[in-house]
Image (tube, rainbow, N blue to C red; front, side, top):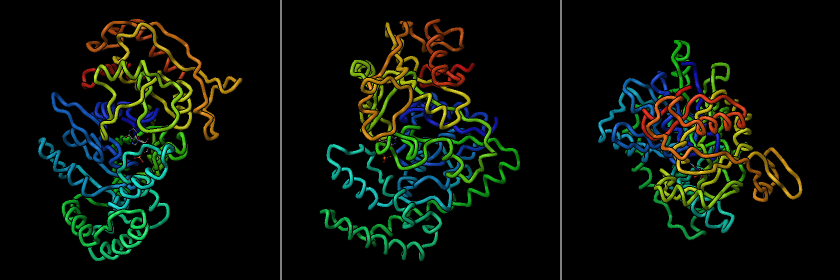
Length: 422
Ligand code: IMP
C-alpha cells in the first residue's frame, strides 16, 4: 500500500476507525498525528468492541507498529489506562507502540481551563469534550507546554511542572477552582512516566528510517475537516490541524513521501458540539437515535444529524486533496423512501455553492436540496458492489461525484466484512 493519509471529510465521527482497521491490513505502520483523547474510535473485532482514544486502532492487528506522533497532545495517565485496558482484552502493545518524545502533554489544569472557558462563554460555548485539548495546544503555541521528553527526565519535569502549576493556579484560583497540588500531580505523572518509558522515542527518525526501507505508512486522522483549526467552521472547531496537511507536521514525514489521501464521510452528516450545521434535520436525528445510533464514542452525547452536505464534502476534497472516498453508514438510510442531498445554499437572496467564511454566515445558510429515491431494502448483508440495490449504487456514485472525487469504499455496517471495495 502506498503511504496513505486517512482523514474525516465532515465534522468527525465519519466511521474512520473502521476504515482504518480495514486498511491497516495493508500497512506496516499506523500513525496518529493530531488531536488527543477527545477522539474516540470504535472498532469491532469479532464480537469484541474496542473504543480507542489515543492509540491508533492498528494496534488491534498483530505485528503492526503504531505511532503516536509529535502533533498529538497526550494525557499520560489516560494513555496508561488505555494500554492497561487493551491488555485486559488480550492485546499487548509492547514492541508495537511508539510515542513521540516531542508530543505535548495534557495536564489537569488544561481540563480545568477548558471547563472554565466553556462556562464563561455561556450560550456561545463550543461544546468541547472537556479533555483540555484547546488549552494544551494553546500552551504549545504560547511556548509554555511540557513535552513527553521532559516527562522522561524527573528533574527537568519537576522544575517545569512546579512553575506551570503555580502559573495556572494563579489563573484558576480567582475563578473559584480548588488549587492543584504540585506534589499530587507530580507523583501521578511520574508514575505514568515509568510505565510509558519503554514506548517513548524519537518517532521522526523512526518513521524516516521506515520510509527509507519502503514501509507502508497509514496516517490515521482524528476528528474531521470542519473541526480543523484553520479550515473548519471557526470558532466551533478543535485546536489541531485535522486536514491532510496535519499528517506531515504532526509526524515529521515530508509531503513528498505521501502518495494518497483517503477521505471518509458518512452517507449523511453528523456533528457533536455547537456550531452551524445547515442540513441539520430533527426527523433524521429521531430516525437514527430511535435506531440506537449516533451517540458519541467519547462523551456519549447524542450527535446532531442531517442530510449529506455536498458543499462541505466538496470543500473537504479541495483542502485535503482527497483522491479516494470511503462512504460509511449507508445502511442508516436503508428504510427511507426519499434521501436529500444539499447541493448549494441560499444566503439572503443569493445562491452560493461554497462555504462562506464570515462569522455567523453559515448559520444563516438555507440548504438547497436535490432529492434521490431511497432503496428501502436492507444493505447489511451486501458483500459486493453488485449486491447493493440499484438506488443505493446510484446514490453513492452521485454523492462521490458531487464531492468531486472517486468512490473507493462503501461501508454498510460496523463489521470488517461489511465493507465493499470498488
Ligand atoms: P475539543 O476538541 O474537545 O476542544 O472540542 C472542540 C469541538 O470538536 C467540539 O465541538 C467537539 O464536540 C468536537 N470534537 C472533538 N473531538 C471530536 C471527535 O472525535 N468527534 C467529533 N467531534 C469532536
